[in-house]
Structure formats: C-alpha cells, structure tokens
Image (cartoon, rainbow, N blue to C red; front, side, top):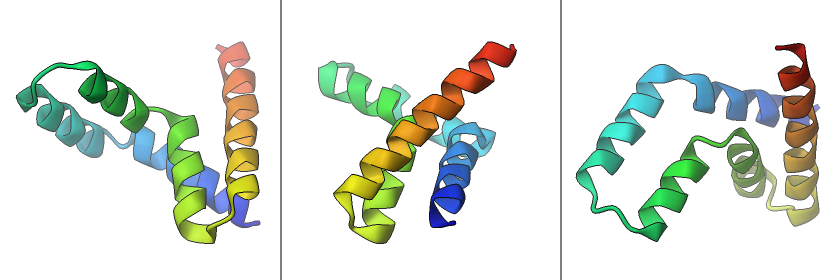
Length: 82
C-alpha cells in the first residue's frame, strides 16, 4: 500500500507545475555543465522521484528499486494510451 502512495507522490511532484517552474528557474541561474544537466533531468523524472522518495521514506534499497520498476512499467503503459 505504501508503494502506491509513494508512486502517486512522485507523479504529483513531477507534474506539479509551480514546483517544476521553481526548479527550472533555479537551474536557469546555475552554470550549465554535465552535473547540472543530469540533476535537472533527474528532478523532472518520475522514476527518479519514486526511487529517492522510497529510499528516504523506507530506507530499503530493494523496495526503492521495485518502486522505480513499477513506475517505469506504469509510465510505459500510460505512454501506450497516448
């Protein structure tokens, strides 16, 4: 049950426009190098958010990998509907 909550929180964080606009504004002020590009991409990634949220909430690496896998599968299924 907690995986559903974590995955839905990750989806909300990625699709919440004010948060993503704040992240974009912050990274627009930073110099462009490989670290900032990868970090900006990770903060807009649904799978990354679900992995790190699971790590921070449960402190279980295997559960975090499973959450990221479920998010990946859900993302593939949702993209097929478009």
